[in-house]
Length: 92
Image: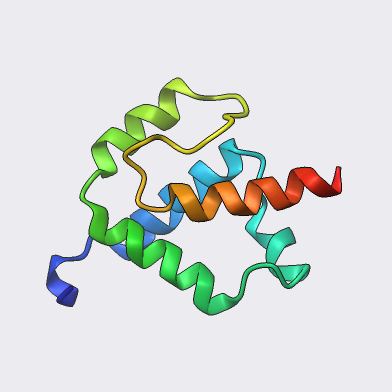
């Protein structure tokens, strides 16, 4: 996707991080554990930037202040975040 069609990087960085956090995922931790690379993290943010659902995501985040069991169904990163969450839960 051409760069000019992607959403603002800062906004989507925080949306991606916030959805993950609401699922109990810490990118800092999963990266330190080697389960997510810097390139993988960048891909998550880029996928979010291209998805076109930032308004819906912000509403979802506002409504889901606790721990969510999954990302919203419209999330372009839902599968990747579910995999990170599942691996985190296996360790607990």
